[in-house]
Image (cartoon, rainbow, N blue to C red; front, side, top):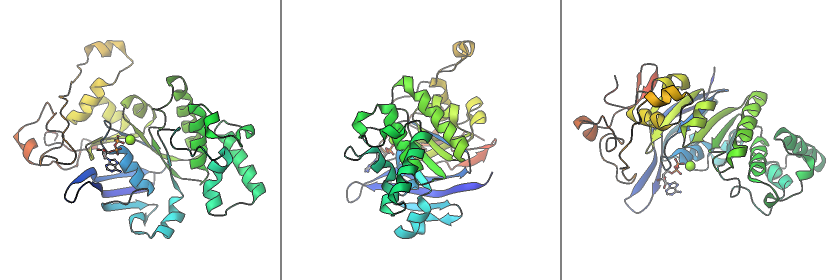
Length: 316
Ligand SMILES: Nc1ncnc2c1ncn2[C@@H]1O[C@H](COP(=O)(O)OP(=O)(O)O)[C@@H](O)[C@H]1O
Ligand SMILES: [Mg+2]
């Protein structure tokens, strides 16, 4: 597999007051291989969407580097970035909030083309029709407005909109968590089909593990803006090494009831520190069942141990 994206020491800090910064993404490094699905998981507020938005170019990074297809996109001027970054698109969590209610489906899907004056009217109509079919909608939907659709259909429109720019890489930011459980599987299957058909690469974001485990080739676990563990899905699912990953997996339902009875659920102290004023040691130390003196004092580094990356003083 070839590398599509490489992220090195990436940070996104939000300035709150003159001296307070919120480190939403804090010195994060990872890579994404062409054609894979990388699952990004962590509790709400840990920086998943901020990371996705920074990759997408919605946010300017505070530090670090993003290399996409061997080009440093962090250093590009806006105009240069645009041509390249058409190939990075995002599907948003809330299909109700992410579509402009005053635009028709055609206008929503064709917006990127219209800005770039890409197609004449006839080609535009034809292309919209093709995209609608690709995402499981039809021609009759083209002139309607978002409010005329169900949540699942709206998410299909959002997907068609992302696909309109012929992306290679799509950040799927909790694409099913706002949808009815009954239609979540349909949207998941659509995303999986599209990946096969179009050779797409996904960063698939979720706050719960079940969907990430189902769809991902590799998994990245985040906590308060930092990567805690990162590696092969099967490896991490069967043998998580970081105490935080262990706690996440112990809380996720598993299918085998025998295993269900025998496994021990790790309950974390509900003591998440504020991301504005982080203690000097390991970010997870205040909740970690295995924390010792060193964890309170020294921030652990991401290390390659037992075939995956892990950030913990006690894993060796
Ligand atoms: N535009 C913003 N300005 C200030 N703080 C923000 C902004 N966006 C997100 N945050 C903060 O950054 C942290 C990470 O948020 P987010 O990336 O949305 O997390 P997640 O997607 O994992 O739930 C949170 O503490 C959140 O309050
Ligand atoms: Mg989010």
